[in-house]
Length: 427
Image (cartoon, rainbow, N blue to C red):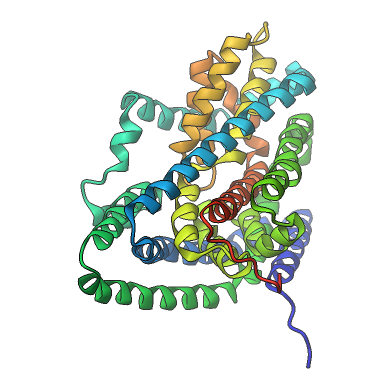
């Protein structure tokens, strides 16, 4: 009997073939063909993943919380999760600042390249600055206000409102814990049935994943700016990538070995499909259904832990984005300011980037809007955002991989700490 090719290999093949096909079409100057006839299939694939993300959060979180049967377990779970996410975010920002200060990527940008990038991407930068300005006008406690929805059904229709959905669903879960078990039983049974249905739908969507990522990669290649433009940003890009690689291959494996006693090789083998999907979609929200499946089925994290930790992580835990914001802020400052930033300003970048990552939506390029807030707080010219637009998309793909790896690490460690990790021998 022939052994079927594992999903992560199929996705990897789709990524490689998509990049090669896109490069060929770019060289043949057939960009329009890819944009009009190939890219829509990638968009359909992302939409399929996004449309199932919110229903998955609702049903799995309700089932997971109802199974806890104890409010004290919920507070223990929530406390450890938030503590982990804050700690890793601060570490990510600090790593980004350290690397940017050592490598000094901004010093490699000459005046000609700087003017060219500022001119080419000033329109894109001004759009993000405008969005960030609206966010800043709302006041310091607005993110707290935004967590509580005024209309749950409206929140359900917006992937960017995931934190509102989680808040309301946690209330439903608490209600189910507090009422008599006999009365809660039919409600929980309904959501358990819905959970099984949604997981089966995810399996069906994933059959399309190799073709979806092929389309996404092909369109990425034809839409990416010319390589001469990217050349000026190569040191900046490598600085961000170095930081992301340190997080994935040193920081998270160390945490897994120390706190969860999990073999990092087994961990990466288990979450490979989610990492590859995160790379191709640049969206933590779109990848969430697959991340949950990998963590629960392959890593052995109990569903009551994964259904709480992972949706929350997809919304507030953005280690890759935080690291990139730190490097980008220092890079822009080095390229545009006469004097280096002092220590106090850089410490404020740690605080601002940590808080900004919590409010960052789990969609492509949301980190750009948050970066404007970080730049403004540090007194760095916001127009400098135009310097990094050319290379943002490929870096966005890489930092999303870090974001979901951090979520999976958190789920594994939190599960171990509450005795809900049952490693699968077949990993």
